Amino acid sequence: MSGPGVATGLVLVGLLVAIGLTARMWAHATTADFYLAGRSVGVITNAFAICGDYFSAASFLGVAAAVYAFGLDGVWYATGFAAGFIPVLLFVAAPLRRFGDYSIPDFLGKRFDDERVRVVAVVIVELIILAYLVPQIVGAGMTWQVLVGHGIGGLSPYATGVIASATLTGGLVALGGMRGTTWTQAVQFCFLLATLLWLTVAALDHGFTYPAAVADASAEPLVEVTHEDGGAHLGVVRDQLTGGAATFGSPGARYGAVGAFALLVTLVAGTTGLPHVMNRFFTSPSGRAARMTTVWVLGLAGGFYALAVLLGTAARVVIPGAVADRPWLSELTLDGVLEVPEHALLVLGRLWGGTSGLGVVAAGALVAIISTIGGLLLAAAASFGHDLYERHVNRSASQRQALLAAQAAVVVATLAAVGLAFVFRPERVAESVPSVVATMVTWAFALAGSSLTPVLLMAIWWPRATARGMLAAMVTGAVLVPVAIVVGFARGAPDSGLTSLLMAPTIVAAPVAIAVGVVLSRRDSPPVDIDATWTRLHGTAADRRTERLARLTSRTAR
Image 1 (cartoon, helix red, strand yellow):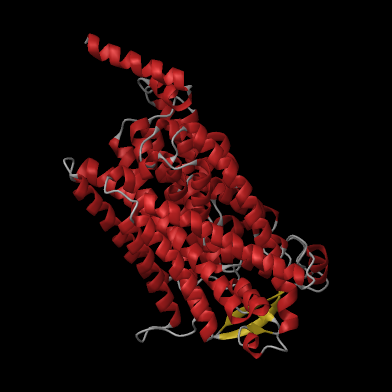
Image 2: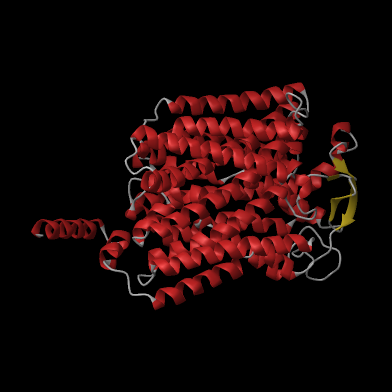
């Protein structure tokens, strides 16, 4: 928007990129380092890196935007994103790390001793990664529009942001792998948290109190900006529960009871199936370290999302009163309401810190996007490079060939995501969604929670699960979700519980996938050598040593 803000934002992003390039010097040219950082990442470092990986554009921009646009109903996003690590802590993190391996497809392929399971899992992982990548890059384009306001080389501002963020992050990941990216993401999370803390302190310094703000925002009916025939129109939000006018502090502005529950289930279940998050637990040195890492992540996530909710509320009450004295703000609002809810934190940054403050918040948004893109591209590299190329395409691949295949996967995934970011431009997504970025990320969570999460849980906790059953479960979830979302998207505004259910379909798709997996597994013979597998997943260190010794003794005797 102006020179100082642009300079501040780009300088900060540049400094964090420099950290990534420095971390590259510590990265080694082995596949174990590229994919897993040598399995030597400490608890706190890994927790910060997971947060940098997980707190994406949907977290930094989207949660505040959803709260700004729909009040209490936007808080469901924060709740679901944070609570998603509870099942990870209780059921997945430690057993997954004890089993070892490189990725979710690698784990599933070895758990069921079936290459078909591995290949299907790779395809689904790549689809989830692509679904998660697109909203991050869309968010980058939207941030560039506000921060810079003009394009480069004849491109629009949106296109420039999309291409610049994707190119930068893809290059860093291809060069640094997991080791370089881990330290980059940890530092980037510190910057994100510091940005939210600064905005919160600024809000409190300007007299903001959360209870008073909620009461103030709830005094009149909730309104929003919609776009029709290329123009902006102000409308009263209808309460999904009562049919009357909605208020900021009451449920029903966006979701009825069914829709809210469906969204929470989708976000909580989806976290367990996110490849870029689950792969990080393979970098821990032990199962105990993986569990403690998750405890740290839960605490950090709770604090992060609490700040995002607070700031979304602050934006709702602060921005309308600031329009009259700030001409630049009138360009972004209609009757005091932001036309693009994702601009909420960016506007607060400029209101309380001038153009430099805008630059800091914009840098935070870009850093959140870059950090998450990095984790997603690494997961794409691990799934393709290790699980397909090394095991099926070129089984005698050298270290260099394997790394080149992984780097090629990063490039392909980046190009595909950029192309889709142009297809799913913000103005092409449903008009009434609380946040374009958060809504699109929800679709990725739905795909993960309906296809991979059921299979992971059954693979870890149900000895009777078989390869055929898990194949059918994965495919069932992966097919049901996009069909449901397309139907829900075609219905338009979520004017019923059915539409909300279709847009967050995990509550239906996951149970169906589990049922299919259970029925087919029951028809198959029990898995062989399940006792050894169970010891590897759930036994103590002494149990696992005894099992390995028995296996070696048996081989020697033969």
